[in-house]
Length: 153
Image (cartoon, rainbow, N blue to C red; front, side, top):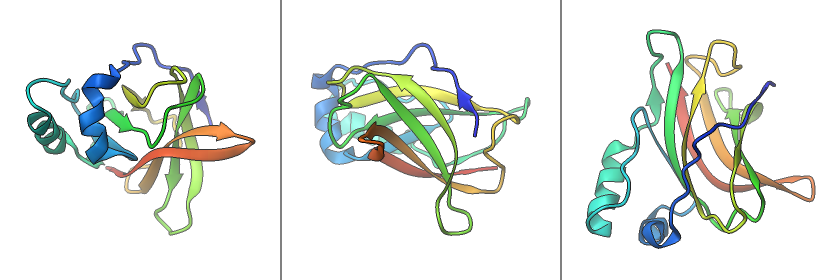
């Protein structure tokens, strides 16, 4: 497993903007191959635009990389200054942790909007299915705040 450096440009959402959508998407990570929309208009319109943008299958770009934009709606506040996006290969059933990426957050934060890039050097493989979890470590145990299942092609 290779640890990737903390990505710059982690976007923090103002809790007031994300709160209405969070009720519908609590515990989920919404993903896309393009930037996800910021809150605008009504909550219903924003929810609809998030659902429309959400995708779970990603195809390599011309350089052989996958870029994933995501918006995680946590079950509870981060409670720490660092969260991990952890990749579990579930292709053969039992989850096998293969990779993770760390993100800086604030303890009160309940959403995380950012992106990550996976390259040919990363242990994520085309054709496999992954449960991707946003986690924190509490008492040496993983506490899952949100998750999604993704396929990379």
